[in-house]
Length: 283
Image (cartoon, rainbow, N blue to C red; front, side):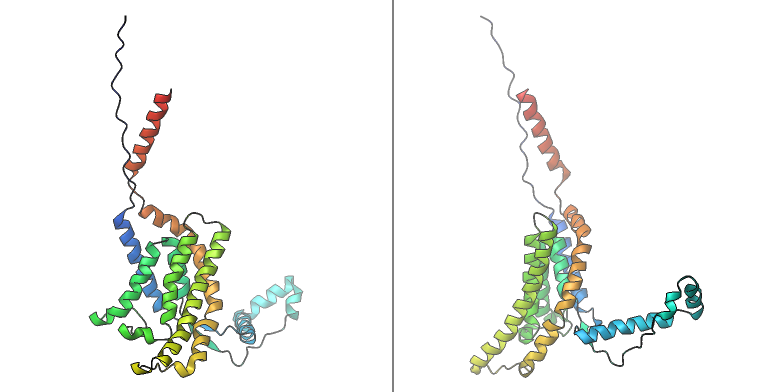
């Protein structure tokens, strides 16, 4: 009888639990807060999104371009394209209405798309908390001051909607970034900001009207329609426009943020060694 000695079983390397970089996540949260902070203090003068007003602003832009072209250039171009002489000179309109636009919603969508959930939501919620309690330490991240009583401001509900928007955008695009998912994420982000903002705007008036003992009445209550017009009606078209640009710009940035919080490469090597060992044992 021949005795066969089997070699001792080789210990299979145990794969460590994959954990994202904590330092990378903290850095991304800080970057998200800085982006939201910068958006708060960014104001753009844009035409009021009404039909006639938009047309008037386009006519003004065309008139400015026509007036900036030197006469010599026009004459040389007319030699090759005689139809240029038949182009009428556009007169600049007399009056164009403008409004102040703050790109907070597109930046919230950008943060939610690039940083993902839950990092983007943590960053936006931290920014909101800093706005409420920062003035106690002489720090004002909100353009209008902030403070613990900021919940009485008409735009506070839109800040709550921004937190929900980061969650919605990050959750929808967490696994795939197809065109459909990106469009759904954009619509969900816009709806979250404006639906929650409008609901808070109306709800605040109702609650404060019912609770008479509080003695707190917001000064903007009698201008409710104007607040809705300024915060949603005038803002929504530009939020949609810049939101599309934010998703487009965030496509490559999301890959960079994913690499920043990626675990060590050694974890992947352990997985490869384990796979090679199993294939060897099967052979």
